[in-house]
Length: 308
Image (cartoon, rainbow, N blue to C red; front, side, top):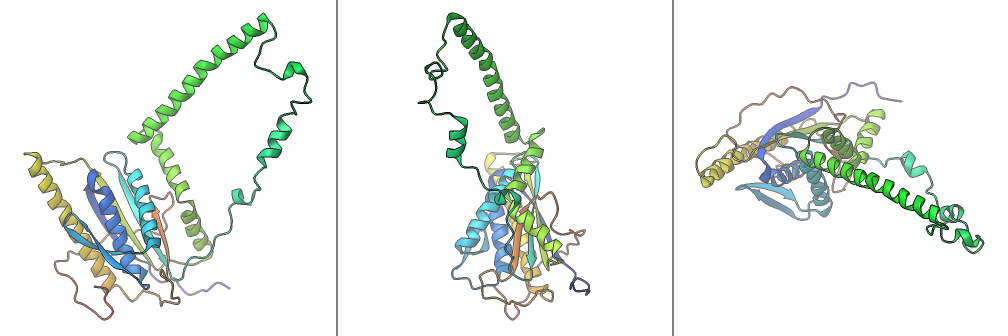
């Protein structure tokens, strides 16, 4: 019987980072590692750090987490393939580890046996008449002409197909036209299991207790900056360093002060909570409220159980 108690308020951390393309991968890795470091809360065998643009970030050096981060960073980089594009990173946390999902309809279908299919589609050549053993060899001059004509007609179709594939690839690379919609579909396919998990948790009435939403915007290199290349590079790094320090400060403040909603740990696993990471999903995993950001100028005071 489902509980009638009202669901607890979902705490959401929000941030926005504008970054030049050359820094996207490094910044995305640092951001996701920081979130996981604050909320994994399990036994970390090798706590570590990474540095981006002179700013040091925490990084839980666990293979399982590293693989998750690299997979999601790859998706984020692809989502930001077009100039001026934005993409959002969503991290959703559930009170207990995620359950196993039932197999999809495609997985339930038994794959056909290639050997049986090929045997049924291709008759035994030993039993076939001699005239059918060499179908590509024309039996007469008229047959030869028909054979040559069919090849000539097939060639333009093959070229058109190749050009069509190239055009689609070029559109996808440039991030314009129909390729944007195709990219979104491909992105959701790449994280199909996570999308299904969010839907399953909603269907079971299992609410998340916390969400992180970080928006990334790709800027043109050295946007709005004049002067020499070295000056532009220095200004770019300073601007990025300011944003990274702000994210680091606010994420630490959130993790250390917003603690009343954190559920008790019921397992000794590395990730005691269910964690779902999504990049620009079609359906949002949680409602993102209007951001209310208070400016922070100092790090929060250390408290009992602080990670830093």
